[in-house]
Each structure stands twice: as C-alpha cells, then as structure tokens.
Image 1 (spheres, rainbow, N blue to C red):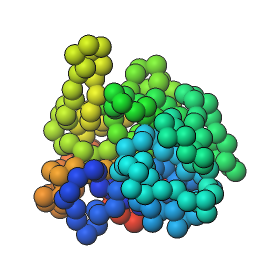
Image 2: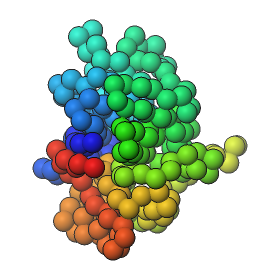
Image 3: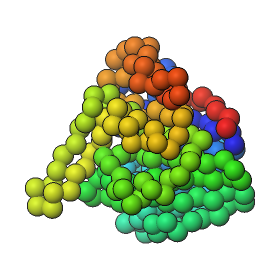
Length: 234
C-alpha cells in the first residue's frame, strides 16, 4: 500500500513551505482520507472518507466553496447536515468496500458539535489507521484496531494533555489531546506512527519540532513528522 500525505497543516494561520496544505491522505491514488484543500480533487480518487466536517478536513463545509457536479466521486462522512448530494453518511463499524480495500469507521471523540470518525484501511494483509483529530477514543473501539502497519494521527499540541475541555453539563471531553498521549494510545497496536495536522508550535521551528517528535520514539517504535507530498510504502 502506498500512502501519500497531501497536507499537514491544522486550522491555523502559520504555515511553512513543506506544511502549507490542510489535511489529506491518499492511498494508492484511490482512497482519499480528508479533503482539506479543493486542489486535492485533482487526484481523482475513487472514494473520499471525511473524518469530520471541520473546514481543514472538508474544505467545502464553510459555504465559501462548493462541491460541483463534476466532482462525481462519492464522499463518505459521519454526517451530512447540509444534505449535499454527493455525501453519503456511514455508520459506526459499517465497513465500506472499494475495490480491494475495506474501510472501517471508528468513532473518535473530538468535537461537541460534529461527529468524528477515524478509519481503518485494510488491503489484503496491510492495515493502517487514520485518526483525524483526537481528544480520545473509547476503549471498546480501541480494542478493534488490532495490529496496524501504520497509524497516522494529529500533532496539534506537543505537550502532554494537549488542549482538552469538558462540557459543564455532560462532562464530555472535547478538543485535541497531546502527541505524547497519542503515542501512548497507539503504541500497543503499531511500531510506526506518522504525525500530521501540525499546530502553531510546530510551524515556529519546523526542524526542532521534527526532532522533538522523533525523540518520542525508541528502537522498537518509529515516530516521524510527515510533510506535504511525502510518500510511504507499507
């Protein structure tokens, strides 16, 4: 499976030459995960899976840009509040099959206002997980991850704990947890973690940020910061 990272910037003003595009991942030029930039449509994927309807993951959701009829590719999302014609709502653990791929939506805690999924992508014996933005994942869903060749997750905050808030009425957490927490969360399932969706902390000194991320790994766990356009093969 070939993985191309299309964009690595979070919903922030700061950017870098190698980190200017919002979130997007492409598997074998067929399966796209998140659509943070309109230009990603030029890759002509067979299907697109959106983690959640925030504009740095779904460029069209803010109303300033529209999906046009010629964008005939089917787009799967956790919800469709605008009832856009080419968005198809998928359900928790309801696998979608596209050619040789099996895509499984896994609920992720992130926002109080929009529903969020991460996606397991399986092709034959290869499996990856793309988390989207994460405040947390319930244990009952973590247990479904199994052995993964790669986890691609977010880097909004380097500090432990990230930036989490709690709803005063329900007690529900939301926001972004920190990279150290994500590393701890996903280490039981993989030996390779790729970080994207970088916050302002990273853009202020990219080289130092990359080194800090790398140091979170060890001889049995590779952790790396990806850049726009970077490719991986698993």
